Picture 1 (tube, rainbow, N blue to C red):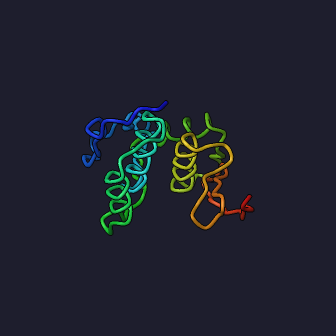
Picture 2 (cartoon, rainbow, N blue to C red):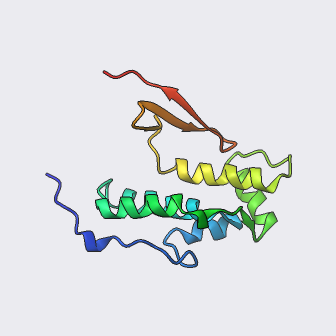
Length: 143
């Protein structure tokens, strides 16, 4: 039987300079837009707590992701590190487009937290990411 999680054990990392998952972005050589930082934090904390997360946290993260202050692009700090990281993930780096490479890395990191069958949405569609960071939806049948 699963016990109820203590809600005080989860906190939202509003300081983007010190997220729990910050090390992965240092290793990747770039920083994604704030919405991806928060999404990665959310998925990471959800994973640590076996999918159990307080409702207030979910609402707060959704509001942050929708916030207009989340506009912005990828900020590359170390291009060489980013390219090496991308190659280690099997992402094509020959195009040289930093945003495309960073988006592919970001999608790969996010997909590590998702089940291999994708994630269900309220519209009964599954969302999948390919190695280039592009999302696609596929309809599913209700059983």
